[in-house]
Image (cartoon, rainbow, N blue to C red; front, side, top):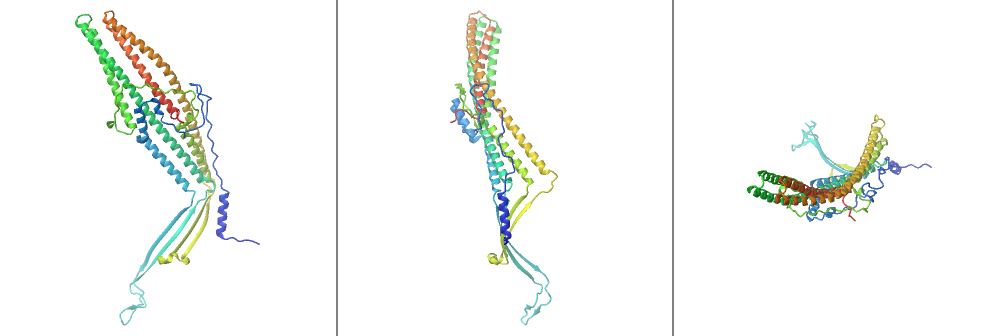
Length: 486
């Protein structure tokens, strides 16, 4: 006995079989291998680990113990325009994921129309007139009109037999995750710039306070030289040298004032304000706080770098593009159905006798495209290889970045100790030479030399302390944002 199935059941069975046989045509994703040293060269005890960029980084700027820096860094989150642009880009990426996910489901449409049509003409010529003068039996120059209404409900669906649509969703999701990492990178970069600029500004305040004290000393020395010249003890050249030294120090102070103004303007832009409405009051009481790097730092910190996370997610997105390109080798299958009715009156649209339905299955396969599909697949593979190379380069750069900052941290700590000793020694020499000058034992040129040496040593010490702080900021950025998060 043979069984006969209706056309609809045959189509449904064919579609179900196609769905059950569906498979992804893209390669399975595996995170590319990257070079990972056993430990950091510049600081023993630091080891690499697996990515953990989603971990909370915490308010790392509080390590510097400055309340004003805390307020400025926190305002970056809501006021910096680069961060705002990254937030908007992330929202776009999430919207694209939702759009791609919607392609997995059928489309449903409702169509309604109404038309009125008619004819105009000169009549049939067969009309007659009755006893009352009315035209009967034909038309005499009139026309005819009729109404037509249509209502239909249609649906279409492309079953994801070969995994192309799912690959699109996965690629969009990976791109959205990369966009989220870009947002974290923009936020970390802006916070790092604010911290570095603010710490440099406070170092300039400290240098200006140092210069102010030095200028006062130079003015006193100028008075001494002037008095000694007036009584004929020293030549006029001593006065000229004292005036030159005083003017030079005052000029240096003005140069620092210019640098401070530029840093203040840069901070204003970073926190989303115009320079005219933003100011940071000078504070010569500079807190020289440099966070100590613990040797037993958790090994997950390097892989918390958002740029590494973004590069890895772009590799995943490029991997899905290979499957999307390969799906063109297989036929595209579509299902469609509609139910509608048409009538000359609106009330008749819902009569069963006016209804009409349809159900269809379509399949299309490209037979010849002169190698275009193969070229697209090769292009997708090349794009994937490019993203892998960029990911590995990002990891290498990250290791080098951390090593650079660790080396700078170690060397600067040693330099600071040496420069502190040099500054203390130069201060003693300056005082001794000045005392000998007052006693008439040395010339003023020796005083000038001692004062210049002492001032340079003091300023070098301040600059080294400032560089240690900005290097700490750079190390925190290299590690993806702090090392004290839970």
